[in-house]
Amino acid sequence: MVRSLVAQFNGLPRTPTIPSPGGKVDNVWYFDIRYDFLEPNPSHVLFLVQPKSQSTHLERLPLRIDSTTNSVHFFPESAEDAAPVVTEALLHSFVHNLGRGSNASSLGAPWRLMTEESALAAVVGKALKKIGVGAEDLWDVSVSSQDVAHGVVDDLFQRKWEALKRKAGYVDRAISALVPLPNAISFSSFSFRPPAVPGSDSEAALTCARHMCNAQPQLVLYSEKNESDYMQQNFGQRLTQLNRNPFRAVKAKADAGDLEAAFDCGIRYFSGYQCTISRKKARHYLMKPIDSPNTSPQLRSASHSALLQWFTEASTTDKIRSRYLYMALHHAEQAIFEGSKVAAPGVPPASPYVCLFLQNCSKALAEACPALGMFYPMIKAELDRSEESKVETSAKLAEKSEKHPNRYRCANEGCPIMANHGRMLRRCSGKCDVDKKPHYCSKDCQKADWKRHKPFCRPGAPASFEVAVPNIGFASKGALQIPVKRADGTMGSFSTTSLDPTTLRELKELLDKGDTKLPSHMSGIELRHVDIDI
Image 1 (cartoon, rainbow, N blue to C red):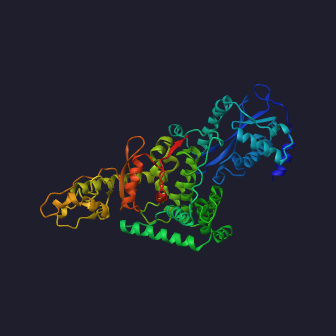
Image 2: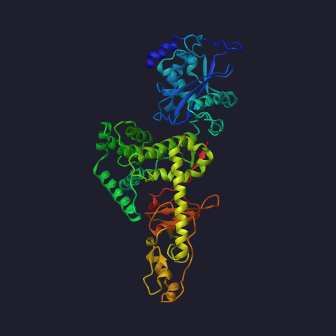
Image 3: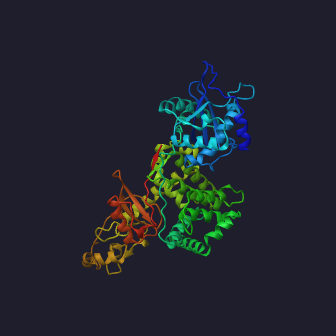
């Protein structure tokens, strides 16, 4: 296919200038890659421009993907990743006369090519030479000026973008105006987060099992106790599964078409369990269940959720590039959609990873993507449901804590731990009245507070401690929680259903100091505040 395309391209006429409505112009063409995030079929696109005549052409990437199909498979993370697809699309565009039709005069092949980014220019030039393009001038792709890239080119893409939005159905001008213009992709300015190489097989297995569990959609409603029991049981089953199935056997099954094994293999490449961490291979295997028509909705939902992490954990900073954000949103939307097919009626099917992503990014998403509900209706519904649930939970907790203020916060002076259910804290077993009994997060806190409480531990005595729980909302049922101060000075919270009180207090001390580098015994905890880099 490529060999035939190269032969056709080499046979095109090629001149230093070409005709235009305003007279002859230099036969020099600019190109870049952008990400068209318009749902339901997002894709990367090649944008070609002749700056002086203002002739333009748009080509979906990779080739042979029509406008009714998404091309989420193609997500180049480097200029080297992009070069083969871009090179083929460049040749295809000129061989087919930039889509002008058979009756239009032929533009021929370009005399020179240029692009904004030096890394892309270098690898595309090498690729053109490698596949056999005869014109040596095209092997040397030049770097365009900023005036071209961010002046003429962006203005011309704005026109194309308006047409794309109309074609996708966004015809209302007020709504269309909320949809931002995609920029040319810059590969060289992006640095990847180095892989967190596990210190041991056991640590890698724990990380792998955590990824597997957190990617699963919620299918049924649990009571507070049953939810905790289910999470522990599921985690244990995943660990057993990992230990019983060596990586080589899992990979062989995945390569033979086993979709559950493909999910397992993708998570292992993401975690580094019995293999070397590889982002590219992790995504390759996690896409297999998404692509197959034989995948169960539950497995497809879990694969989308796992890929959500793949996109949000890419950068070395806590800023997420816009195309990574939109692809993450695409996977989050699909994860909820697939989960809703098998979840019991009334059950929000979002996985823990989807919930965490939306919780971390909700404010930034509202600012960066005001048309969120238009592109991602299931995400919008989940955000609304989550907010309503928090308000309802906070109201109930405020009412309960007003009636029984001692019950929902550790009574030991200085301990910040709170709970949203009375059973989460231990109650004094002494002779003090039931409504005056202090509650504690641990035996240590109860022992430390005994000197103060001892004089009050008798019938008819007043409470030794009385304070209402701050109304900062709980993310989970049956959780312990600490208040934390955000970087902007506002108060937030950290909830957990699995950490012990000692670790939770230690975590608060670190967060209050602004330290997000956690000690080794907290390696399973993820702390991320995400900003969006548009």
